Amino acid sequence: MGEALIKGMLLSRSFSPEQLRASDKVPGRRKYISETYKIKVFKKNAEVVRNSDIIILAVKPQNLDEALKEVREGLTRDKLLISILAGITVGRLQGLLKRGARVIRTMPNAPALVQEGATVIYRGDKATEEDLQVAGRIFDSVGRTVVLQDESLMDAVTGLSGSGPAYVFIILEALSDGGVKMGLPREVATNLAVQTIAGAAKLARESRKHPGELKDMITSPGGTTIVGIKKLEEGGLRASLIEAVESATLRSKELSKGGKK
Image 1 (tube, one colour):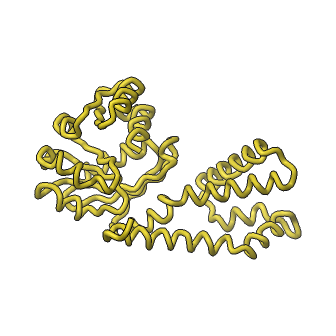
Image 2 (tube, helix red, strand yellow):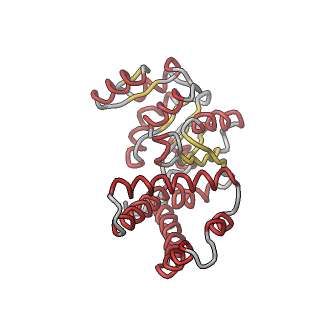
Image 3 (cartoon, helix red, strand yellow):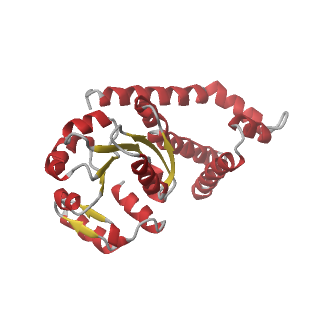
């Protein structure tokens, strides 16, 4: 995700290579990032913090304590910390930092890798409105952003947009399998399924119509679509997706409270 943000910020021209810095412990990754994106890459996180005004914390949640211990002294009040760590609250981050730390919590998802991500942003109480705008500018470069006023809803975000791409991939695979069952070559079936989902999503976004209304546009009386929908309802697709979001949300709550990984 860190690389996705670098790529997005540069492609959108929101930031120049001279403005970006990164760190990585792996020499091969440092070389790759430096050569690919023409930005400065450091071995130590503390070097990035020392030379930056805005720090994006893009480590695994289990590495949080180690990462912040290394950079805590450098994270003064004049620096903004943006976290993309799932399940890690603003309160926990502020508890590991100096008093008055400016923190913004975000939850991007996998399509950010192709600049089609959905990112939810929550502003900590010490962060400013300008900080929020900066975070929006960064994550707008990899998709679309939504500002959340209630941090407790971040678990629902994880259950929906965080885990959601995996649900869509399962639907995509199933549509392709259905085409193959009916005689289509695998490549043709997969390409049709991918474009069908991509096109439907774009239509929903740009038409601003309710999904039910869009469904009805395609469903003619006694036609092929209605019998297909009947089978989906018999199989419990709608209920299963609702329950998937609910289950993933509850699991996110468990992890944010220190539950078993």
